Length: 272
Image 1 (tube, one colour):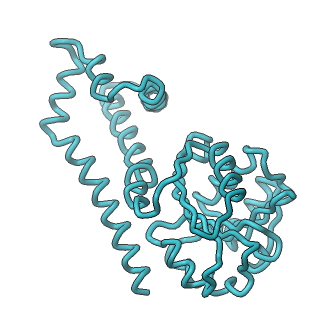
Image 2: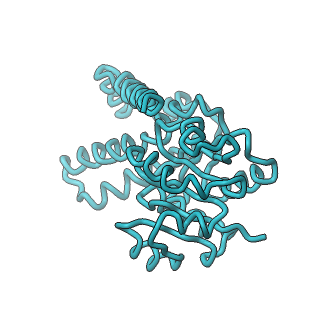
């Protein structure tokens, strides 16, 4: 039987998932329902999916419900829909700091089926990552469906839920850091006279190429870095300056502070 998928909320991450699901061709557009009081018209017109005007109508029409809303309204929304959530429904969470146990408690139903995910923004262009975990109520055939779906959407990794904070640092939040790196590299080239449009193209493609080369080669990133650094050449001068400026330390600190914040958000949700 064809599954019906719904979205409550459809911000950047929700839209990224929606676009990936449509491109996966596992679900027909006629079987996708969206509620978003701000972007509903845009989503419906852009992707030709069904728009509904209440959260509960998503639950009524769908087997799988993506909760693509901000963490600060998660529990308010779950409170609205919990009476309709039963063993035939699967809730897919994607909010940092909110655990499957938090959702179980809010639904007041220990039999609720929950999939926790952490996608990232490059899913919008089918180049993203998804980490996911299942609660104990998800059946084996349901796990297989999600595994296939997620692998069609992006690079998908099943992991323990307790590692989600680290995932958020490594892939959930890190696109922002990548975009800052792109901007900084391009700014330097513009400073030296290169047109900005050309700088962005060169830097963007270089980042894509480096990622692909790293994943496909199986080589340590330090070895690949060494391959660019000729003795006494230009690149090693730049590498030395980055090291002197604390480049690695700044990145590690940014990621660990992101992880720390995610853990704090989890603690706050536990104390709600």
